[in-house]
Every structure is written in structure tokens, then in C-alpha cells.
Length: 209
Image 1 (cartoon, helix red, strand yellow):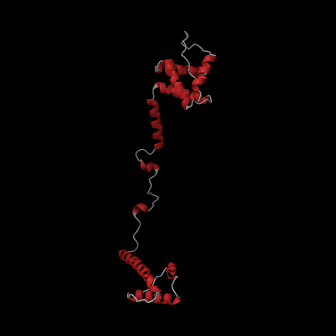
Image 2 (tube, one colour):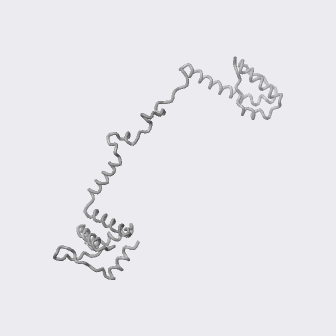
Image 3 (cartoon, one colour):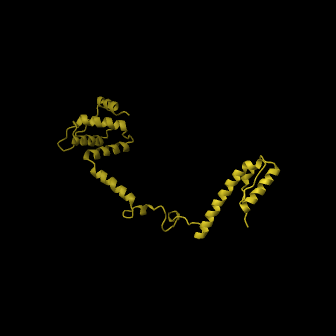
């Protein structure tokens, strides 16, 4: 026994038809579903018969697909990669992405340590000065650091060892800026230097952000 499947939105296609035309159209649809014979219309229902045929064709394609799947044993199963398995999830965990080195955070820490090991003595001294300024609640800004480096070049003549000594001198004396390296005492330490007003004004001009 054959059947006729009609979706409710087809009602909009028949809105312009009279009840008589709707009746003839529906009767023709039942006949076509049962026998496959196309009717001959004389009224306005003939204008939407093309839409009816498209509906029948789409339903036939769907039925053929369902029938083919039934022959194969039912609806095709989902691909294996889309099936979640708690023991073997699709998305690998952090340790699964790199089983040979699961401690990725530790690796990053080691890389940072290696970068520090590769730093030059002057870069280490400069980083210590940055930390010193930060602990003094007077962090070294980007512009101030550029000016400080320029002043270091001027005071040291470009010598990194002298730059390190100048930075150490500023930290030792609690200075926010850098000044000309003072002579050592006989004991091996540096002579204590009192910052003059002129030097202080020079510092403020050159290190102000």
C-alpha cells in the first residue's frame, strides 16, 4: 500500500486556489502517488503542479537512500574520529601531545634558564638594576631605560665592564640614575659620592619619562 506524504508548508502554495481546485489537486496527488500517472488540469491547480512533482522527486530520492541503507544493515555509523572514548579522546591531553617530554611547563622554565645563562655580564647587571628600581617603587620605563643606556655609553666610552661598575655603584649608593665612576679607595671599595644639584638636575632631564 502506497502513501502520500505532504508537508504542512505546502498549504502556502495552495493559498490562491479555490476549495474546488484544492480538491482536484489533492485527488490528483493521491492518484499520482499510487499509479505514477500525471493528471490533466483545467483550473489554476495546474500552475503549482510543478512544485508537487519536485516534492515527489525529493521524497523518492530520500526513500531510495533509506532503502539502500537498509540493505547495508541500517544507518551508517559515525566515523571513528568523531566518536569520543574517555580512554582515547579525540583531542590529546597535554601529556599526550608530547609523550617524550610531558612536563612542558618545566621545559619552558629550562628554556628561560638557558636564556639567562646565555646573557652577557652587562645584560645581567642591567637586569639587576631594573629589579633594583622596581624594588625602590620607581620602575625603569622604556623611554627612561633608553636614556639611561645612552648615558651609560657616554660615561663608559662603550666599555661593558665600566658600565657594570657604574650600575653597581648606583645600586650600592641607592641612586636612581647613573653617574661617572668614582675612584676606588685603598681598601678596594668605591669612594662615596654625594650627588650634586647639577648632577641631579641632569638626571631628571635625561631620565624623565
